[in-house]
Length: 305
Image 1 (tube, rainbow, N blue to C red):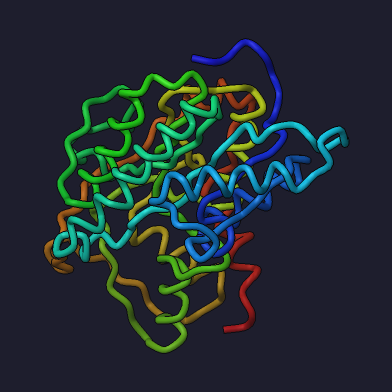
Image 2: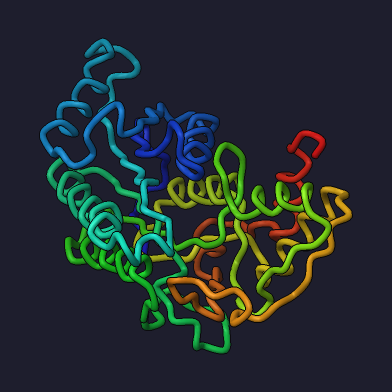
């Protein structure tokens, strides 16, 4: 599904764009693409105060001369804010639902009232992992955890509004600069230890934040809307991702494969949450590079460990 015209937003507000793992990458990519971008954090505006958000958008708009070249209205909100502590969400369901369901619903109403495009990021954890093939966007969700259920509730709240400019991107296994993530933690531990044990029977779609941001910009430019999957090409187990990161970093730590039963967690994880990105490739106009290439670039950015 897509809108008829082809153009990037002129002005975009990126929630989580100042200090979020994904938000920062998206804000930087939009800016490079020529979009006037305002990255914000919760310190700038109360995300849950609709009136405050309205005023904040107005202030961003009115900061320019009314007849000047930058007087075009704000036309896009990017929501890169989420509660992502999967295990902690089991004990804090209210906070998980607040950020992952209530906030998207509020932003959806705001986008509807102001006729804005809205981009929202969701997760592979909306699936139960029982499918023996990559998941398509229209496959039936069945989350195993509070985190997955709260993200699905956010999707459903937005889809119920039937916004013409809504784009929901399910993504997975993010790594990138600026904030702690699985790959960074693995590299830190590998520098301290001779051996690590990592789960090898859970499979997903490792995704670099810079690559996801680039993909988001391409989809916006081509006015893609609806529900899509967005990730790097390829798939991996957690063990495969960890071992490749350690190898690229030139560390001598041994990365041993273990089953899920060897690393129990409070929240169950899907055994297979690989995302099918076929529709996204068609709408973006290109195929994202393999996760190994994105990982190599990310690891090369680290100081000597």
